[in-house]
Amino acid sequence: MVQSRGAGALPAGKSVVSRALILVVHQVLATLGVVLWAGVLAASVLTVPQLWGQVFHTTDLRRVLLASPFYPFQIIVGLLWGWLVWRQFQHRAMLWVWVFPFITLTLGILDDLTRTSNLYPGAIGLDFRITMMRFFGSACRLEDHCFSQIGMTLPFYSGLSYAAGAWLALRFPIRSRLSSRIVDMAVIALGIFILVDTLAGVIREFRLWHSWLVLLAGAFEAAMGACLIVFGVRMRRIDRELMPGILSQ
Image: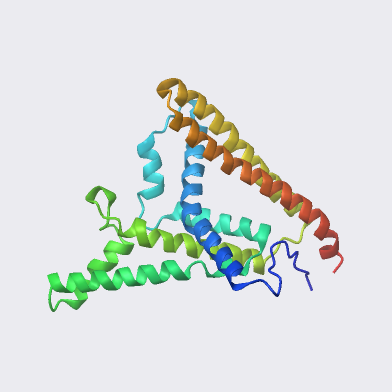
């Protein structure tokens, strides 16, 4: 039987307040964190084609992040982010971060159904289709000042994918020393790539705008890249301690 590393396991006597704070932290990581990571990763990835002369603009970044009502990029990032954070801390609260966004989304749908019913009395089937298109389809666009999906649907997708990533890390831990090393090095390499890309971007943008906001945004993005490097180094240390015991079982 595989022993849990217990890096972030809660002691039996941990207070309710501490558990609640941990849940709140993971709730932020699962919603706002996923959105920020999606933006940073998309922006960094879109800079790579510049090496062979292909230039992408803000509209291209917007298309990647917001063009599809199903938000596939954020869902993928949420899965990876949840999987990575679970390997760091193993907090069971991570598995429940989808509940609050689900409740919020459900209340939003019910409220919209009520308002739509007032506009179209007696047309229950029509009401439901209109609401589903607003929350899960292409009927809600930021250009039309509709924020239902950004405010409720996307946080639910992000929280659910974050919890799913944590569950996958729990159910299918890495057992191979080689696979673990590859993953750790990939995380470190991604962090270094974000740092280098951020530095180049800050130098380029600061020459154009001379704004402290550029430096502030660059510092924030660099901190996210440094976070990945720390995570990768920490995973390597933990894997070196646990892998011999896992392989011997």
